[in-house]
Image 1 (cartoon, rainbow, N blue to C red):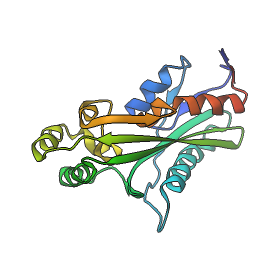
Image 2 (image 1 turned 30 degrees about the vertical axis):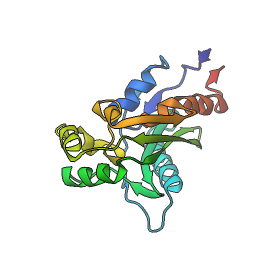
Image 3 (image 1 turned 120 degrees about the horizontal axis):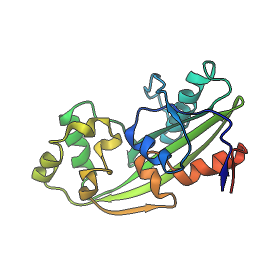
Image 4 (image 1 turned 180 degrees about the horizontal axis):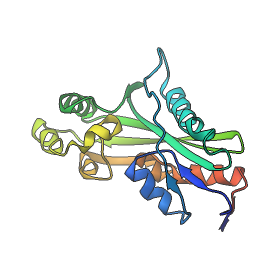
Length: 195
């Protein structure tokens, strides 16, 4: 497998987990977060939301870096088709996790790649089954306020994995917000990698 390394690769995200996952491809990249309004539009569906935000994060940097390969993504959790975004505070996180207790929750993770004025996107789906959670277990988990940066209050790369009893996905990295199988497919479509 060979990557085309004649181009600059930019990750338009400040997410430490996305950075860690992208490093697994062993390509040099810069981290330049794009700061966009991530508000949900009225009646916007979860898949449309992550697709729109993934695209906008790339496009926000396109004029500054017209020759670069821009990579971005977005993730939401949904319970019964209702979007669970990042919690506003610890009380909100407690409410989210209480609602998820004992239920299957769906994660939608978009990855977008902009190169030569063309944005290609894929969204991977992952289902997670929450254990039946006691109030004490949720409160204990919430002592680490990193959850405020996580969709649905689920920081699965940390102690959040203890809240789960099962994960179903065809792209296992999607639960971390950067579906790596999807990303390599987009690189291939952009002729940036020979697989």
